[in-house]
Length: 147
Image (cartoon, rainbow, N blue to C red; front, side, top):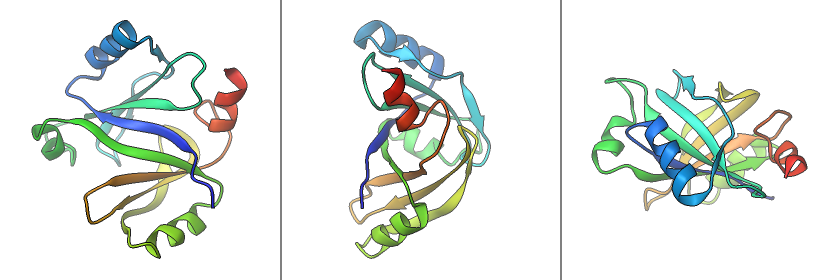
């Protein structure tokens, strides 16, 4: 079973300000609009360094009821790793058999039209997102072709 890295999720107070900082300090290029995902209670934006095969996802709570506020109040920063997988059901079962707790079953994701995401956590509070492989501007296959 392969788990190629799709993106690193970074929790921020302000997506626009954080994007500007990553662009000016580290040479990232903004690779998506700001996307609101009400299911994930977040605004997200994807950035990528030229020639890179994966993204940085900036994640910001979408309001006072966001499930991300607690983590942001603890300081934000590195939030999760996301892996793009060919068979999300099989990947979910693989992680469950290896002592990871599924905290959110696969659901369609606004940022990846037609593709599902699932969330897992382990005993050390490592947060992992699975993304179903497929076509689109934020797919590893499409991203590699553009590099």
